[in-house]
Length: 78
Image 1 (cartoon, one colour):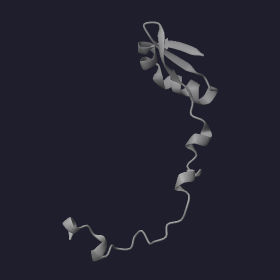
Image 2 (cartoon, one colour; image 1 turned 90 degrees about the vertical axis):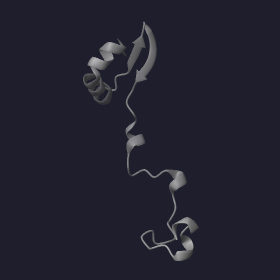
Image 3 (cartoon, helix red, strand yellow; image 1 turned 180 degrees about the vertical axis):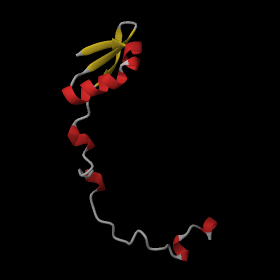
Image 4 (cartoon, one colour; image 1 turned 90 degrees about the horizontal axis):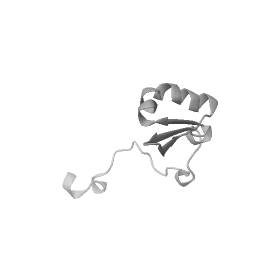
């Protein structure tokens, strides 16, 4: 675990991100000697673009590129 003050964290942010991402390091950022933030890596599974959110699972039952009919448009836009 690495502990730094805010100024050090700002000046070393790029290097800290490398350590967090590649080595799994955890960084505590302190203000006036008290921890206020923790910098950790996001699990690879959380950023996998192929994992579908369970609430979004399903099928689109219409053609999303089909133009809207006159009745489907709101009154203020007709």
